[in-house]
Image (cartoon, rainbow, N blue to C red; front, side, top):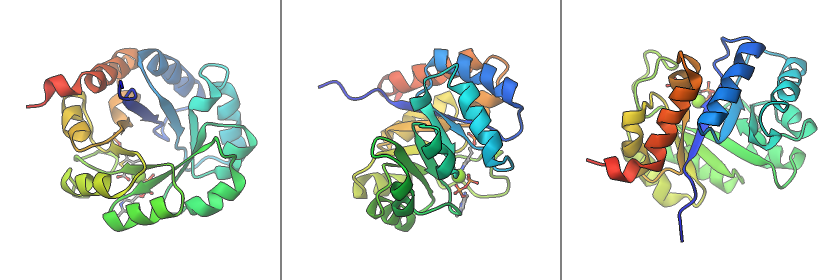
Amino acid sequence: MRPACPELHVITSGRHERDHVLRMAEAANKGGMTYLHIREKHRTAQEIAEWVEALAGIIPRVQIIVNDRVDVAAAYGCGGSHLAYHSLSPEAARRILRSNQLIGRSVHSLEEACLAAEQGADYLLYGHIFASGSKPGLAPRGTEELRTIVSRVDIPVIGLGGIRPELVPQVMGAGCKGIAVLSGITDAEDYYKAARAYREALDHWEENTG
Ligand SMILES: Cc1ncc(COP(=O)(O)OP(=O)(O)O)c(N)n1
Ligand SMILES: Cc1nc(C(=O)O)sc1CCOP(=O)(O)O
Ligand SMILES: [Mg+2]
């Protein structure tokens, strides 16, 4: 059986205005994006809802994942919600979301990963794997603990943090179902080309393992 297509999650920066993100989402989607995470921690629920409605005119709603605001994801029929450390638990989020809406959880240790899986998360984001401008001054976690997590939980794990296309084989080789990228796409001059480079790296990672 052919394995499922590796996932490419793109995370918004919190630094760009809506119209900019609409252009980025359209181009990244053409380049092979699987999900767009709206991670706009300083915006209100009303603003995020407006973003969802505008984005849903450009990419399928099911590809939109809302960071933290489970209420917005539920009310606007998004693909799911991604929970940060300060968010509702996966159990609580499931009381609000429909069964076909994904619940993701950021994790940074084996303990957090096991707990999130027990509480009903559908997938995990583990990071930051490599040095990341988004996490200044914090040491990267590498892939060792990631491998242990993949072997211990029975839900998909997505790697994130400092991932460039040439690093994709290391992340996929650790057993991830895909990757999540912020600056590698949102800071790119050409969003389509950037997403395409990650998509190519994901689809051919086994040919590029050292
Ligand atoms: C040990 C540790 N704790 C928390 C974070 C950041 O949490 P997260 O839920 O991933 O939220 P954002 O990354 O979206 O701010 C971390 N990186 N490490
Ligand atoms: C939002 C986020 N959370 C992380 C974590 O480790 O929890 S790393 C991250 C952002 C990763 O950005 P980039 O792809 O630019 O390195
Ligand atoms: Mg995080």
